[in-house]
Amino acid sequence: MFEAVRDRYPAVWPWIRLMRVDRPVGTMLLMWPTLWAVWIAGSGTPSLKVVVVFILGVIVMRAAGCVINDYADRDFDGHVSRTTDRPLAAGELRGRDALLLFAGLLAVALVLVLLLNHFTFYLAFGGVFLAILYPFTKRFTWLPQLFLGAAFSWAIPMAFAAETGAVPVHAWLLYIANLLWTMAYDTEYALCDREDDLEIGIKSTAILFGEADRLMIGVLQAMALLPLLLLGHQLDFGLFWYLGLALAVACFAWQHRLIRNREPAPCFRAFLNNQWVGASVFAGLWFQYLAG
Image (tube, rainbow, N blue to C red; front, top):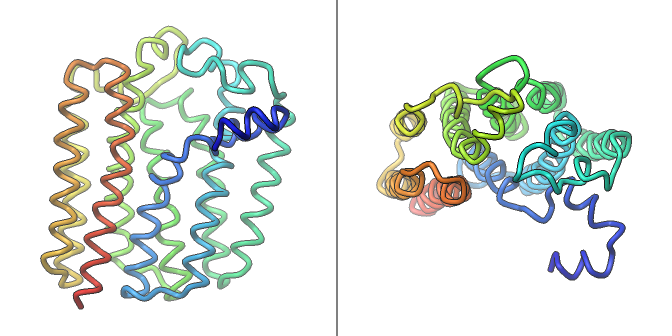
């Protein structure tokens, strides 16, 4: 499908690539935990309006995040082998183009959030702040993955606010779980670029952890599971929820097999595999509510 768009609309193709529309895995990594929150907030039967608004919001804000990330990294991406062909680094689009697109996407997100209650509207400003902040954290902290986790998790309290008008304790358990999981998979992603990042001075947990990188990824994954187990206990979930978590653990085990030699291509495959972690947890949640 994307090849047809590229061939028929070459002028549009750089804009699609700038928003990563052609790479939907990142959208799914943001979508799954958002759906976890929407379904739990709605006790298995969330409002259709909330579901639609958050699905569209995830798509729009993931695109916006990619645009502002590439704008922030436009002087670095040309020195990283995996990112040299990105539209800003390759000169296909200008920095001003990216800022205009970012503003347009935020305008669409604003329209969407205006369909929800005032509490959700005010929370949305925190999400925008984190989306703008994250790309620049690579300059001043070894923990940019922490900020990405905070940004990727912000839809969780927003979903509870939209569905219930409040953000209960179990919403923050989901938030913490997703933040830690995001740190784990983005460290896998950062392993792909570690050598290039060292040369150009970009910071990441993959560099910070050094030889303990695989151990720390495992620690983060285990820590992400603990709040999910506690959440299941608090909400009196049964077999299906824990089967979903078991499938997530199986995915984590496969990822550790892939990253065992720290080679870029398998590390990237490990990162991609995380979409199935999110799907496994959601499947467990879905069947849990169906079972009553």
